[in-house]
Length: 572
Ligand code: AMP
Image (cartoon, rainbow, N blue to C red; front, side, top):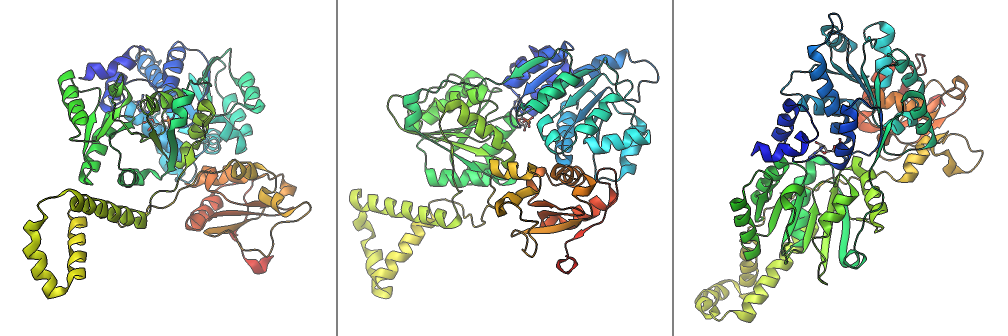
């Protein structure tokens, strides 16, 4: 079984330890960015990859880095053993942790030392880990430079540097830190840069730091048959990760597909989701690359016969499947490339039939949704998840339909005559009917689902643009207006006072960079930023305000310690 699964990666000439770990994680084949980026990186080329979150870009650089750790371990000179071979720079602490966790899981069979280094964590713990020796350091730029300046991070023997989400790092004002960090590394290093967008500033960075790089870009135009494109309803739901199984259950309850394929990224996800959906009363079966032909045939037979209606599958397993009665395709994750989206949804809307394609996206995957829209030329409507009230209404509607069908078709109703007679004499006909409807609804097997799923929304382009503009969203108030004095903060947000401003050269990206680098917030969580001559005001979610205040008090902004506190209206 392992063989079937690992072939995709083994063909890329990755070390067997890595292929084995990937098989264990349920990765069946490389994503397009992995297929394109891994071979040139293994050959030692510099590389520029245009890829957003959700494409599998982390493994695209992490696997060649770990392969190099494995192959270099044997011939590493004495004394080099403690200084890192690879440095991965990420814009936020959140991403540093995510990349480091992913690398740990890929390295489970090889014992590489991967050390995450980011602001907000006590520096002592990181010092200990760095002193013991690291093969790979995953760091936010501010904290990496801090360690370099303290002499606790030595990059003299560095072989590979990766700049992950380079556009975000520039947006956050980390250009100088990156420059200073790379200056301490050998010129002979291999460098890879990944970025979702390629504005001119990124091209400048590529010219400065990379040497004749291979360029890897996900295909732009993808064929979507225009006719079937029109017949297929395409929409997306934005759901926080932890709520995805419940959200999918709910969407399926509302959509009531005749037959659906739900695509997942890994075998593990397929197995877990199948279990969860069956636990909710759906009829789901798994299909993945680890199953032999007989098992697959049996599953497909049950789908065609209608004894179950949800096929939970990986792309590899679903290759070549042609199911006539398919009404829905569900992307449980945003597909790793627009091509794969088009390929998946091509399974519905065939031969003049109508179909529905639903995509669940985490908020951080918004760029992939945009890429899919651009590639297919069809807008993806972002819809609101069904609420508890919607579900109740739907269940009642289904109960009512079922009762209507019995009244119209069933010839054996007189069998129940005596029961209705006696109950209606006792309670009246209306009460009796109500009780029967309740019994019918409760017997339908649908689980109660009474917790609302919190709304998650995608940041709009405007949100992102505003955050980058000097003075934050001051543009909203017309020219010449100052900070929003006297107005309260946005609902759910708290305004923080930062005792430095324009006269010290502070720009919004300096504040976003400091907050995202030192706390668990990402740039997207930060609200209005207003910069005046000697101070600035920044909105952060109320729940994170204390954390941000103490994190910023421990650090410096643009090299200087500054006052940070919750805003006091009387002080202004
Ligand atoms: P990334 O774009 O690096 O944030 O990856 C997005 C998600 O895809 C992560 O949850 C990865 O674990 C998953 N992933 C990456 N590569 C593969 C693959 N080849 N097969 C299945 N899942 C993958």
